[in-house]
Image 1 (cartoon, one colour):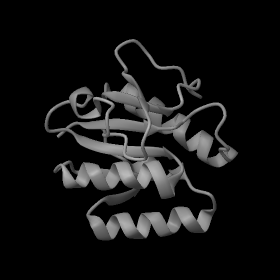
Image 2 (cartoon, one colour; image 1 turned 60 degrees about the vertical axis):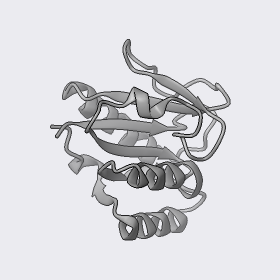
Image 3 (cartoon, helix red, strand yellow; image 1 turned 30 degrees about the vertical axis):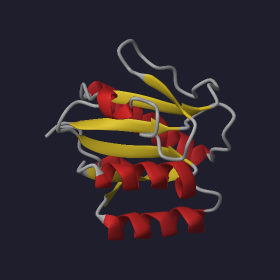
Length: 145
């Protein structure tokens, strides 16, 4: 089963630590090198931190759940597994992951490639999403085949 990468709010104006930014860049590079489908979700139409490539949808969200009103479900390949990464673990990353699980997607949350208001908050989100059915894998170990 192929994995699609979903990057949430990876934008210039977000407060990313250097470690998370580097992890996101490496994850995106691995996904593209593997030929994975990449979808960018942003808030407020702000510029992305990493430019989208041709064929990579860029969707604008207005709710924490990136499926709400964006066409995200239609932008994802049918039957794909989702690798989720991005900013505001407690809000958009969490809400989108929970909705993806409710829709029957298999979800891998890329540990080290999502960021909350604090490291403790990001860890709490990982624990809660694992309990909800998401797989938590370090960003370096997320499979794209």
